[in-house]
Length: 321
Image 1 (cartoon, rainbow, N blue to C red):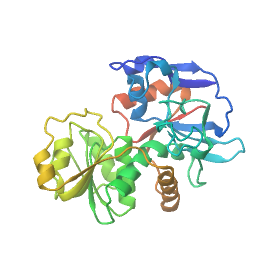
Image 2: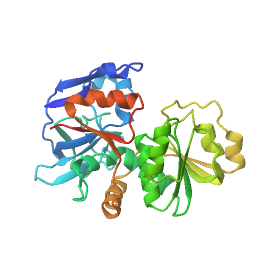
Image 3: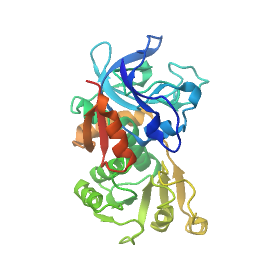
Image 4: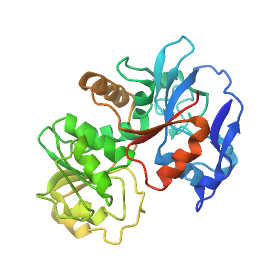
């Protein structure tokens, strides 16, 4: 079957390891289901995989891609939850959890096989392209906002780095849930887009906000860390799920963190129940993922290049056929 896969690891030039071509199709195994992929979406996790983060060379070649929506063997429209081993279903209770592409082939292919427990019904209100955007970036944003930040309608939230998949999702979800959303971006066009999606105001990185916020959604890391901490009200919560600009900020702001009793919470992906709740939320409210572009799978390299260059707003979706 045709797939986009990691053939080599290169920390400095990750796209040099990306190959498009034929790979073996998944084989049937007890407790697993093979899905015919109709749409899959790109995540920064795919670039990190090409750098070797979570993907050692001995597991190469590895089909990339965490997110997918498609058709199961009974003809049902489904969505894939990409955290494997979270429950023990299909792999046994002793295997540590992983995300597709770390231990098991991913979704940038004509077919993907996952534990049957990881397959959820796709709401009829969502297209395959929309549903394929939800299981990683949008699920991460959902968990950051509603599980780990603990915000409620009327609270204020700062989202750093508008334009990225998680950041974009957080703005849209927060607005729909009655939160007051603020955003930052280096790019003026992305700030304008953030306003169109529901942010009350959008600022250049490091700008002073109208007031301190209840929570910060942080995926940028070192470049915005100090601003994130300084933007919180006393007792506020900073939720971090990524560090695309580096994980060692020059100013950790430890004094401010302990003196103002700020909370710093790490967040990774989300549970199957949270994904089901996210699917239901989108179906019920009309909220839809922001899709930057839809490309055929054989043009996957274009999507990777644009994502690596920071030229996307929202999600890039790949379609095998």
